[in-house]
Length: 409
Length: 178
Image (cartoon, rainbow over all chains, first blue to last red; front, side, top):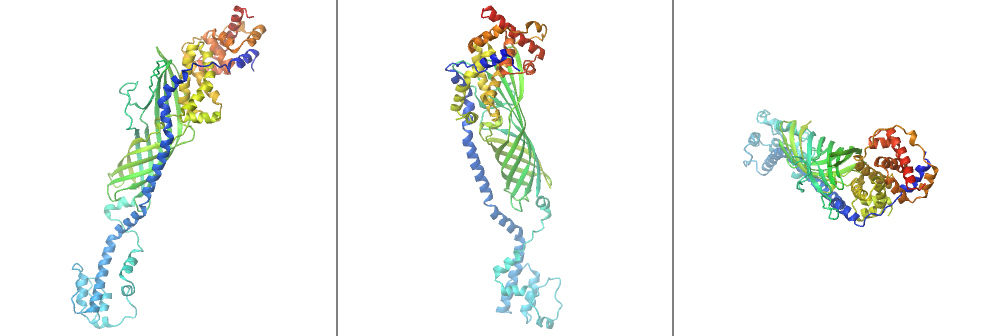
């Protein structure tokens, strides 16, 4: 409960206004110049990144169906070729029987059973011979008289050849395709549809040159945004922002989409972002900020090499949503004698931080179940005004490198 | 453009919005800084530093609260950070009873003063008295909050406040206002 004295003071002093000097805003503007320029570019890059991500996804998805057909064809190729050989021989035999039984057919030398068939074709009933092609190890002991006897039902192959043209007969052979058993060499790679990645990643901005930090030269600070503007009016050296290399660790689980080159990945990531600002105005300030994020990425991978290779080269495009689990800032003020005071406070970091990413990856299998991967890439973090300014907030694409272990199961 | 839209533009780094924000709030915030700093030169420096901190942190402002309240707190904190090292407040809670009480004539005189005149009187108080008086009577901090901010005991905060009242009355008597 306020007494009269407090009421008077509150009334008279809380709203007291004093007009500042005319040039005071210019001094402030000079101090904030670089920060403001960076923020203005944010909206433009936001849109450009969204369009680029959409284009990349569309380009990756477009050839998917063609690729799937090619993969199926290559898997069946040996089977098809074998079937074609047999059928061609049979058709050739049929033709030769009809045209002239006495003509020696030109047949593939590798087929022993065909040789036997040709010799058997010298019998008076050649059509029956075509229908009863048998392996060489089982030369038919059937007497000629029995072979001549008409059979009540046609054989399995004869009606197909009579009723269906060549193309149709081939198609009927391939359409009820069931996946071929993988070769022993590729068993582990083709069976393992799931992939788990454990990785550590570091963002680095190659477009920015390191700035001579006010901290020690051995520090790993990298300046991505410098607002060390010399204030001409009051001769104050103003603030520099320093952002440490953000470190991300995470685990992803991926699944192959069908037999094609695509796979889908998701997981959990933890990111630590540390920043500081040294500000020399009327007094010397130091702002130290630490923001930690947990994120869920979702990305589509496109493998450029066959899954049977130990080496895999792939492209990936994805999105991620991250929420801040901690955001704190410590503000310290220094005088000529050192640290004068320090204060730590929580920062507002509401809602999710969204980002897109494009990576090119190189993976190598050390064993059928374990491998290493190496992924350089580029990320873009969408604007979220409810999050503190960090390394990601300067509206520039961020290059990163991820290195990790991969296991297949 | 309302305050919410203005703040949103400032978050995006719109220079004209920041300038407008500065024009609206700089006089009020300079008043805050002046009350705490006690002289105009230091107050102007604190105004500059406080706005840099405010624009740097503006993305952390929650839209549901009062922006002016959020801004004022930043300037009070900035001022306190500057003053904290200079404040020499001992943990002395004795003889509080001797300084309790403010004459009605003093209250009448204060009531009759302009804001600037009253500010000038308060700025003549010792730093510790002035800061506690501003925080408790003007900003509405509790003694517990003041104790935390200034790293003193609650009793010391109360003592400083009562001494500030008594000192103000003495100044009025010295100047023969009462």
